[in-house]
Each structure stands twice: as structure tokens, then as C-alpha cells.
View 1 (cartoon, rainbow, N blue to C red):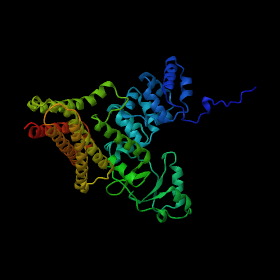
View 2 (cartoon, rainbow, N blue to C red):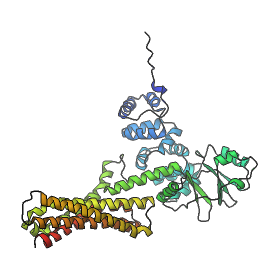
View 3 (spheres, helix red, strand yellow):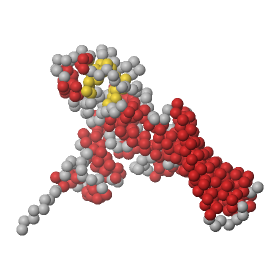
View 4 (spheres, rainbow, N blue to C red):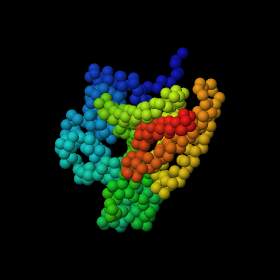
Length: 466
């Protein structure tokens, strides 16, 4: 009987759905080593640029360089835009000037500026004059890479205020090969100042002879090139924008920022904050070398070790208290843990509010009052639980009620103080234009440990050991 089970061949899968897994990496590595370039290209032919970028980072260094050399210029250029800065720089370190020029020509101006910024200065200076859009790219390189000017593209569709819908439509067709994603048509005056925008939907539904000035939207949200990219992300998120025009202080159109660029920015900022909150450099990437990773982590570990040393000094200063009542040592881990947890909780919510723009300077007192209320309520509950445990559990020693009162008051005081520190430090750092995410790293944990231990031993000396 003939087998009627459908057979799905490798070539029948939708383009881009070929999974980048360990088996694929292993197969391509072996094929590259054996010189089977044609088979390698067949395997990667259906991969999207983003998947190809992921594959390159998983291959050995020599294999990644060889596969990148095999890619056509158009595909290779698109892959470059998907790679992180350090890996891209390593991949291009031996590329010839002509090859670099051909690859960068495939990119939009914002991505071209990013690639050039990662190249050695002498190499970039050779490639830049060869580019067709060299002046636009040169201008983008003058902006800080973490500002609106650093992430904007110079490609956009614009028409004069005297144009008609038919002329605007023709301009969209003319620019189709240059502007990859057209979300709107910008209307400019003779001085290149932005007057308004026209959505593609409105452009298609309007009569051909209609003047664009009659259908354009004049209520346009814009930004200037010096605005931080994180603020740009908040603007586009708040107003649900897919494209944001960048204008000079005088209102002249400079470029636009598209949603794909800002999604990358939001992801990068979130990754940076998570790393800073974990006591890392904020720039670490999985593809980094061991040396770079150690360089980013070691300073924070040293800070943590120094802070732990200070905690040890506090314990040493109250050595006499421990000698009188060894039972006090049993509660040191609890006090330190609760101080750290309470501080991180409050600092995390403040950092989140600052990052999203939901926490304003005028909200500081209200935020402090709310956090203090939460700390008091949590502190009373936890203090009661801990005090009751001391009274109920079989703990050796004398003056058990006095010990219960000591640890309960310590718990309440430590949680309140840790919460206040966790709330105020991020606000202070933000005021000093320092990333507030630093507040949830070793600094908060260490400072709360020191404060918690000091409070605990002082109360023990005043209540339990008197």
C-alpha cells in the first residue's frame, strides 16, 4: 500500500523559520571546515538577517568570518545592522575598504553611522568619503550615539507645501528604494521647516488634485537631536508613534526615528538597567570575551567585598554584646536579609517609575509618604511574627521577652530605614543625572546591611543587655 503520509521537505518550510539551534551550528561549522560553501549557503538561504546574525554569534570566530564573507553584499549589510557593536567590530576588523563600502551602502544612514562608529578611526576615515550618502552619515556621526540625533535616519519622504496629492504620491514612488519603511509624508516649507504630516492612508484616499496643505496634520509631535534616546522611547510609547520626526531648534527637518530603532533602544535600556541592578557594568553582552566580562564585573565585586568588610567592622565593634549573649548572632542573617529585601523592593519601584516617566519631581513627597506607610505596615507585621517566634520557639537563654522585644523593634526600625534609603537614593542619583538603576545594586544592599546591623546591636545593647 502506498504511503500517504505527507512529507515536508526542508525547502518547503516558510522562509526564516529554520531554527538556529545547536545542531544547525554544528552542521554549518563542519561544512565550513570541509570547504562545502555551497551546502552552507543552501542551509542559510532562507534565514532572515536577524537569524543570520544570531547564527554568526554562535559559530567559532573563523567560521563566523568565513560565513560572513560568503554572504551577498545586500544580505551581509542587513545582517550587520542586527549585530551588537563589539561583535560587529570584531567581524569587520580585517575587511577590505571596498568590501566595507559595499556593505555600508546597503544600510540606512543611521545604521551606516553605527557601523562606521565601531570601526577604527583610520578605517572609517577611508570608507566614509566613498559612500553615496557620505554627508548625511558624516552629520549623524557628530551626534552622541545615545541621543535622538544618534539613532535617527536621514531617509524620509518630504514634499513642499505647494504640492498636490498626486505629486506627493509620485514622490513616495520615487523614494521607495531609498526609504525602506514609509509611514508618513512630511510637508516642508521652502526653509525645510516641518509644517505637518500626511499618513499614507489619507494620501491614498484623497483626490489627486488636492493640495497637501489641505489634508496634512499640523499637530505633529517632534523631538530635537540632543534629546536622550530613553526619553525618545517614552515619547513614542506614550503617543503610540511608529515614526517621530527630528527637527532642529528652529524647526527644520533633520530626520526621523522609526519604531524598529526605538524597540532596540527600549530593549538595550532595559538590559542595561537589569545589569546595573545586578551589580554589573550595564554593557555586558553574551558574546563578550572573558577579559571584558571580568573588567565589567570585578569592580562591583570589589565594592561588595568592601561593603561586606564594613559590615564585619560593625559586628566587631559590638563583639562584647555577642560575648554576653551568643543568641544575638542567630538573628544577624535575618536582620541583614530583611534590610536588603526591603531596600531593593522600594528602590526597584522608584527606578521603574523614573524609567517610565510616571514618577515626577512633584511626586517625591507623595512617593516617600506611600513607601513609609508600606514600610510601617510591613514592619509591624514582620516584627509581630518574629517576636512571637522568639516567645514560642525553644530558644536557650534568659530574658526571652526582652529578646523578643529587641528583635521585633529591630525588624520594624530596619525595614523603615531600609525603605527610606531605597526610596531616596534613586531619586538623589536621578537628580545628579546618574542612572538610578545603580541604587538597586551592591550600594543599596551593602548600606542597608550596615544600617541594619548597627540598629540591631544598638537596640540589643539598650534593651536586652542592660
